[in-house]
Amino acid sequence: MKKFDQHFLMSHEDIKEYVTDYLKLFSSQESLEVYEIGDGNINYVFKVIDTTTQKSVVVKQADVLLRSSGRPLDISRNKIEADILNIQYQLVPEFIPEIFYYDEKMAALTMEDISDFKNLRYELMAGKIFPHFAEEISTFLVETLLSTTDLCWERHEKKQLVKNFTNIDMCDISEDLVFTEPYNNYKNQNVILEENQNFVEEHIYRNEALISQVADLRNNYMNNAQALVHGDLHSGSIFVNQEGMKVIDPEFAFYGPMGYDIGNVIGNLFFPLAKAMFYQEEDSFVEWLTETISNIYDQVTVKLKKGLEEKVSCSLYQSEEFQTRYVKEVMADTLGYAGTEIIRRVIGDSKVKEVSEAPLGEARVKMERALLKLGIECILNRYDITDGKELISRFTLICG
Image (tube, rainbow, N blue to C red; front, side, top):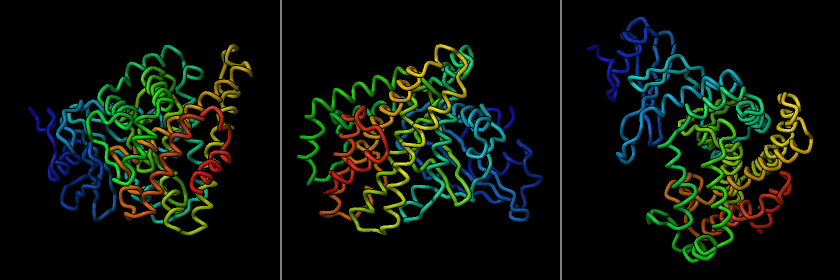
């Protein structure tokens, strides 16, 4: 049996041998260096670079155990990631790293190195501005989501894709972390500031109207096989520079509601906005970020309407009334899932750095309460908020 014919977790030296002797991507090992660049808790990510030519690739390997906790996890998640990246690359190649090879036996994905792009979460935490981001991410969302619905995709092929992207383990994680634990803490894993314990009890745990609506959103997430969604499209999965952006890490991909991806993008942008507002950061950054959030909502709405007009061939779906109702439902889902993302990142155990690393004190307490109020507002009033300006206005009012 050859070395790479059966799965094992590769070391740095194994990675060198893998890309040279097995994949034949490099001619020799002598000038290769390997760095681990992943900061997630699920997979292992390595950058391989030839120090002479500067040629580089990235190898992402899944293990049979979750990296952070040792929980068993199906390694086929990397195949799902490779498959969705290939589909999205065909739709929007400018926004997706190129896939060179997927090795099912080793659960290893070898792809383009995108080191020229930087992690959006860290860039926003540093107060950096990206003027074209709303235009780019709204195009990415509409092109990758609408194109993979059976309004646009051949229906038999779409049904096969639903089977291929049945991502049981990763969806199970989201069903718990996003839609269950933040509302009843049944695993006793929520992490809440002492000053906000009573606030969470009153406004989250005992809020029957909220619980009812989250139940609807959870049910929709689990049963609405609408489009091929990324499934974890937070700002840490988006890499940017002033020339463009790349979207990575779709290991949570499955066929679900379009609004889940759109809502995750919008929801995560409120974290750097809230931090900037409550810790009195640059006015220019706050102005740009509020405009960006508003524009993403509005541009997705407009591009969805245009996409339906241009991409849909079935006469039934060409009905203007149907298309208007379709977009309204997607945007209502968007706000609902933005709300669940905001709430779970504030009180759940999988937080974002904008919250967890914000200095403790009165500003932190107020910021977290404002975010929770926004999350509740987005969920309960998701059919009433109809444009980006109103969304921003409601958050501004919450912040006082």
